[in-house]
Length: 107
Image 1: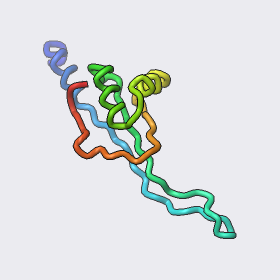
Image 2: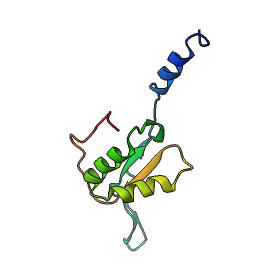
Image 3: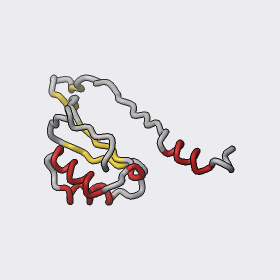
Image 4: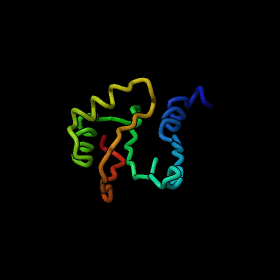
């Protein structure tokens, strides 16, 4: 079947990927014997990009530039710099609101 319908099964496998992203819970503050905080929890947002899923790089980085309040050129350079990994992460320092911002197609 795979030989006869190889193209169909290849396309199906490309659209059938599962990405497991473990999210660790907060650990709490770490303090020294005087009560001075040495390590603390903070919210950090990451945007993961799967290069094989990007259809229009310009549209993607223009959109992310608006949502993340960053230059699209900066984001694309950051993406291209780490070419060795399969999933790229663009770090974000400030709090962002992603409600209503998700797009599943068009990039």
